[in-house]
Length: 334
Ligand SMILES: Nc1ncnc2c1ncn2[C@@H]1O[C@H](COP(=O)(O)OP(=O)(O)OP(=O)(O)O)[C@@H](O)[C@H]1O
Ligand SMILES: [Mg+2]
Image (tube, rainbow, N blue to C red; front, side):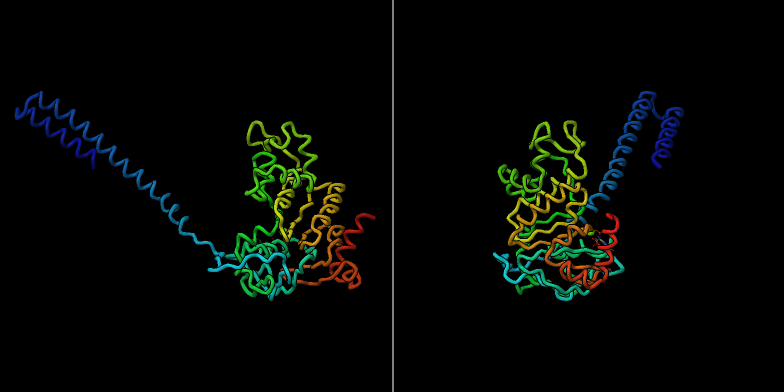
C-alpha cells in the first residue's frame, strides 16, 4: 500500500510538471520529501512490529509473576520443636505428581522416631525420593497427612523446618563456584563462617580433596570458567555431602549420598555419619544393602507403598523381597 501510494504520488507530480502546472524545482523538492516520508513511515511501522514481538515476551513475564506457590504458609506458624519429641508420622499419605497418571506414593503409614535411622530401599521409581521430598515439604501430600510431634507439617514455619533438615538429593547441583561456596550453599547464612565450612568439609571427607586443589578452598570448581578445575563424580559427591553438615540439623536425609564413592570412602563416610548423627534422626536411601543394613529400621518400598519394614535381621528372617534383593546383591560378591 505504501509503495503504491508512493508511486502514485510520484506519477502525479511528474504529470503536473509535464503539463506545466508546477515547476521543475517543485518536482525535485516534492520527490525528496516523498522519499523521506516513506522511509519515516517504514521506520514507524517497523517499530510497531518490534513492539508486538516484545509484547509476546511480556506475556510470559506476567504469567511468571502470576504463578503462586502451591506450598502455603500457615497464618501463625509453629516453631520447629527442639528437640523433636514424637517424630514424623505418616498417616495414609499418598502423593501424585502434577499431570501424572499414577501415584508416586500411596498408603504410607510409619513413624520416624526421634533419633531413629531409617533406610529406604526399593527398585528404581519405587517412590523413595518422593517420600523424602514430602518429608522436607517440597510437596504437600495429595491425600493423608504428615504429623510432626502431633501437629500437621503444614502448620510449621517452613523456613524453620528446612533449617532443621539437612538434605542432600540424588541430583545435587554442581555449582560453578568456589570450593567453599559450593559447601556454603548448604546454609547460606553462614557463608562467611570459614571454620564451619572447614568442619563440614572434614566431616564429608572433602577436606583431603581441598588439600590437593591449587587454590584450596578458594579454588573455582567446574569447567565453565577458565580458572576452574573439574572434579570426578565421587569428588563432587563429597563436596555436596559437606552441605548437609553445614546446618545443626535435627534430621539428616541423604538420597544415595555415596553412589559415586569408592569402597574405602563409602566405608569412612558411614563411620563418620553414624557418629555425627548420634541422637539425630536420619533417612538414608541407598541401593547398596551393605549400607542399608546399618540402619535401625529398613523400609522396603514397592510401587510407592511399603512392602515390608524391620531390622536387617527381621527382614532376612522374613525371607521376603528384602532378603531376595540382599541375596541377589551378595551373590555378586561370592
Ligand atoms: N517431578 C516428577 N514429575 C512427575 N513424575 C515424577 C517426578 N519425579 C518422579 N516421578 C515419578 O514418580 C515415581 C517415583 O519416583 P521417585 O523419584 O520417588 O523414585 P525413586 O524410588 O527415588 O527411584 P530411584 O531409585 O531411581 O531414585 C516414578 O514413577 C517417577 O516416574
Ligand atoms: Mg530417587
